[in-house]
Image (cartoon, rainbow, N blue to C red):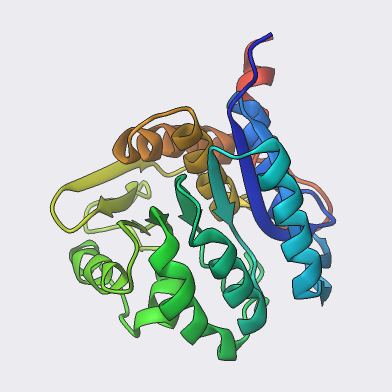
Length: 273
């Protein structure tokens, strides 16, 4: 039996199952890889928001990481919620010697507006974590947090990417899903992302779907990129495939509870029957 590519997510738990390691593991399975996890925090979370969060000790994160990497091995790693400077620095130290692709999702704020990263941890993200990244995947709020650059229109995304690249990742994926539609795009236009390594540019566009149930979008995209990289794809190939997967997951997102529901990680499986 062929062993599937192995991907490790280092992130927080979402008790509602829409984001965090739950979203990551569902995505990794849907894309044909074996997902593994090192939990950094436990959250009490549902469709309405985050009701509580409890950070794990750095030694617990380190032990989980070492258990997986030293025995099972990994072909890609994805990071998500790292709520404190201590955790950011611990994870950066663990990632530095690895020779596999690393996708850093610099999670700052939840879909519901709940802060998931302490202000004191931002410097550690800039100086320690981002330099380990093969791909960094900030949304526009995270770009502003990390660089001070406010992206108001598509043309601003190049400046944002340059600023992120200066912090050390090999590639920057600036996610423009929060941009307002441009002139003449009353139908919502397209959701545009910019992927660049400072030399090549890839503008990735997908139709916007009129669906408010988008919880877990960022986690899902980063996990999908990691899964595709673990399968041996180039960064541009992996990001394009991941955007296609997450676009379908957003279109199929469904209502759970009274608030914002999750994207549908199993949309391809369900669509096949």
